[in-house]
Every structure is written in structure tokens, then in C-alpha cells.
Image (cartoon, rainbow, N blue to C red; front, side, top):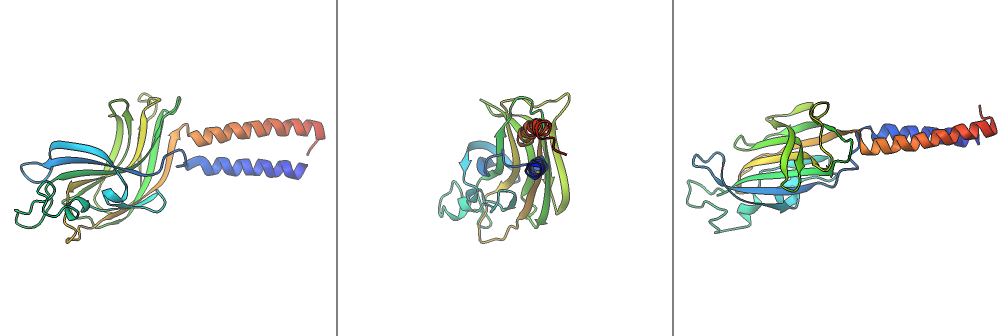
Amino acid sequence: MKNKLLATIALVGILCMSASADFVPFGAATGYMNVFEINGTGDGAGAYQFGSGWGVPDVKTLTSDDLTFELFPNINTYDDNPGDAYWRNNAGAGPDGNKWLEASTFRELTLGAGETGATLDFNVSLFDLDPRYELTVFVKTLNPPGYGVSAIDSQVISGTIGTTTLSIGGPGSELVAGDILQIGFQMAGINASGLTDWGSATATLESVDVVPEPATMGLLALSGGFMMLIRRFRRHYRIG
């Protein structure tokens, strides 16, 4: 009996430690595309056209585990639409796209009561992106039903970097229960011809902490229940 109880204590301890940076409460990676006209100078977003959910491969992001992502400029809308002047500027000096795209890849969860802050650690291990594209890593919250941004921290990536931290919320600027917490990436730039290699970036979501973490709080409650049970067994069986 004593050995079984000690093994239970060890298992609960391991589970609590393993939940210290837990992505499990977040949904799987998803994609979203905002489409704009190109502005008059050809280097930014003009008039907004539309936004919609896209599959992760369709925003030109590759991942096998929803933690490490290889992100490319979007070529689908150019290559898949030959002769379509909406997507392709075939009258220009060379074949190029005709829209400014903001392609987002992210994971999200809905904040519960008492979840007042969030911290994301990420690492960029490869970067050879063409300078006409901008890659941003972000942690942010959206407020339904309008889904306006209620809190955000972000960083534009211009090369390989070590572990970097983004955070939102905390004392004095607490996050709001019911808001949607998103962690992920946005690639911005002209939709491109796949005949040109525009480079890419590889980034890893290393850890995320939500204050308090849903998984950790649940495990702590579980471990508390086990400890109460163990104390009762100790009194009854005089363990130790």
C-alpha cells in the first residue's frame, strides 16, 4: 500500500510539472486571410476587400505538430488563377500579384474566469524571407461579437533569433473572460508568382503560460485531492 501511494504522489508531481507550459487547451492551428487592394505606392495595403477562414496549407504554412511552422508568402491565389485580373497583374513589368494579403496562422482558446494574463515564448530558427514581405509573431485577445483586438503584443521578425517572449495582461491590465486568446503569425505582402523563390521563415512556439493555466490549475486541484486522500490513508494504515 505504501509503495502504491508513493507512486501516485510521484505521478501527480510529474503531471503538474509537465503542464507548466501546456498547449493542450489551445485548438489546432487554423488560418485566416485578409485581402486588400494594393496601395498607390505598391508597398502596402489599400482598400479592404474581404476576410475569411482558410486552411493552414492555403495560407502557405506548413506544420506537422502545430508547434513548429514554416511560413511562406502566398502564391496560391496567383498560380491557381491564370488570366484572372483580380489576382494577377499581368500588365506590369513582370508577372506579379494584384492584391495585398495578410495571411494569419494561429491557435486559440476562449479565456475563462480568472485567466488574466498570457505569455508566449517562441524561437525563429530559419529566415531568408524576401524583404518585400513582413512576418509578425503575436499574442493577442479578440473581443466578441465584433472581434476587435482588446490586447496585443507582437514582434516583426527580420532574422533568426533566440527565444523571445511576448506577453499581455497582468496586474492593472487584466484580460477579460470570454475574450479569445490567439497565438501565432501573420505574413503580409503582395500575392506572388510561384516561379520566384520568395524565401520563408521557420518558427517554433516553445511555451505558453495563461495565468492561471487551465491545465495546471486542474492538476493542482487533482493533486490536492490526492494529498487529502493520502493523509487519510496515513492515519488509517500508519504509513511512514
